[in-house]
Structure formats: C-alpha cells, structure tokens
Amino acid sequence: MKKTALVIMAAGIGSRFGKGIKQLAPVGPAGEIIMDYSIHDALEAGFNKIVFIIRRDLEEEFRRVIGNRIEKVAEVEYVFQELDDLPEGFEKPEGRTKPWGTGQAVLCCKDVVKEPFAVINADDYYGKDPFVKIHEYLVAEHPCEEGTSDICMAGFVLKNTLSDNGGVTRGICTLDENNRLVGVAETSNIVKTADGAAMRQEDRSLVPVDADSLVSMNMWGFQPEFIQVLEDGFVEFLKGVPDGDLKKEYLLPIKVDELIRQGKAGVTVLRTDSQWFGVTYQEDKEAVVRSISRLIEDGVYKNPLYS
Image (cartoon, rainbow, N blue to C red; front, side):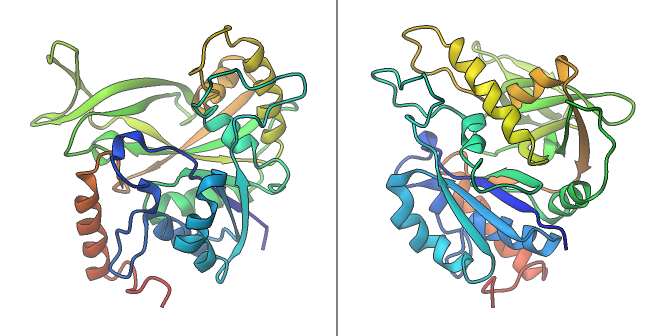
C-alpha cells in the first residue's frame, strides 16, 4: 500500500473558545476528542501515518490526551510550529506573538513528510466521505505540467458547515466546468437564516449567500513536492511583511489561490455532502457532543472508538 500521511494542524490558540484548549475538549462518550474521529476515518480510508503540528507548550498535555493513544494504532510524528522557525536571514520581529499561519504550519513538516499528504484542522469534524475521496485522489496518477503543483481539496456544501451560535468565515469556491478551482472568496460572518444563509454586515443587515455553494474547510491533498513550494513562498512572504506588522500571516488558502492565478497549480475540488461540525464557539461543544452521540447510535462509530 502506498504511504500517505494525514497532517493535523493543532497549534492554534483558539481565542474564541474561551477557557481551555478547544482542540483537546472531549466530545465522545469515552473522552474522545474531534481529532480521534478524524484520525479513525483517515486510517479507515487508507492513510497510514499521522503528523501532529502543535506548540511546544502543549506537547505534554497533547501526548497525554491523544498522542499516546494514537501511537498504538498508527505511525505518529510531532512537529512544532514556532515563531522563530524562519528561513536563514530572517528573525522574529520584536513583539510578535501571533503564529505565522497555516502555510508555515505545514512547512514545519518538511523533515518528516516525504509522501502524499492531506491537511486538516484539528477542531473540525469532516465525516468519512472526504477522507476516502482525498486518499483515492492522492494515490492515483494525475498528469501534471512540470513546475505545476497537483492539488485536491474537499468541497463542502455551505449549508452543511454553518454554526447555530454565530457567524463563521468560509472560503466560497468558484469552479470551472471540470471541477477545478478558479478562486476562493473568503467571506466573513456567514449566518444561518430561514432561507439558507446570509452574510451579516456591520449594520446587522443581511446579504443572501447561496447555501448550496461549495466552500473550503481547509481540507487539502498535496504531493510531497508542495512543501518546497511553500518554503520558497515563505521567503517571498517574509520579504513583503511591512516593518511593524506583527499580525500578517502566511495562509495556505491564500498561497494556493496565488499559485492558481499564476498558472502554477491545478486544484481539483472533490465535492462532499458530509455534514461538517466543529467547535468555533464554546456553545458549539454541546452540539458536537450530540452529533457524535447520534453517529454512535446509527452505528457509524463504535463506543469506545478504538474498542
């Protein structure tokens, strides 16, 4: 079986979650966290290596809550996203406390990821279907022009990704006739409405959004060569950060969009009708617990998960 890795971005601070670390909040009846279900689904789909991107200050708790358990069922690697992990010639700006973003997070994997890999968020539940589709894509042969990155992305239906507890930001996708990604429009404060979905403006007015649009939920599939593309791009990004800007981030979706516009990447969007859920707000946790409980009742998962 071809080796494939699942890279999980778990270094986020989780400022909207309130007290506690949202990536480590238990949601399953035996103390499982959202990552447990993603890893279970990925292994079932054929992935055989798990890479956790974490902060060093989380390592001890992270290993205790999930890492030690996953090491018993899969090959596991840990990498650390750090502010001073910069290319030669660059230094962390004085006063910078914000992480460099998801692009740098994946770049941190350059020494341990040498195989096709998927990237997901730690605090998102994606469902089984997109893991199967991304794995099938990664292990298949796809002709690609030299110097062009072959990328795939799970495309979720917007209405399946909304929160009952507030607005969310979603990357709304534009596709061509071959289901290739043309662009992603980051759209903030999308809320559920009686008619589907709308963007809430600062004056509280609502602008309708097509609830059947496909959106990016940061679930990507890459070939290992893409990490070099990220590394080269990070140097260019750092050169362009204005002096005194302590918050600018090197973001994976923005880099992919840039590559598309430059003709340096082709992104195949793999539509999924899976119901996404996650913990954006503290109030979301109980809804996630209920959703996991229903999936267990329906026989989708065992209880305990790894029994």
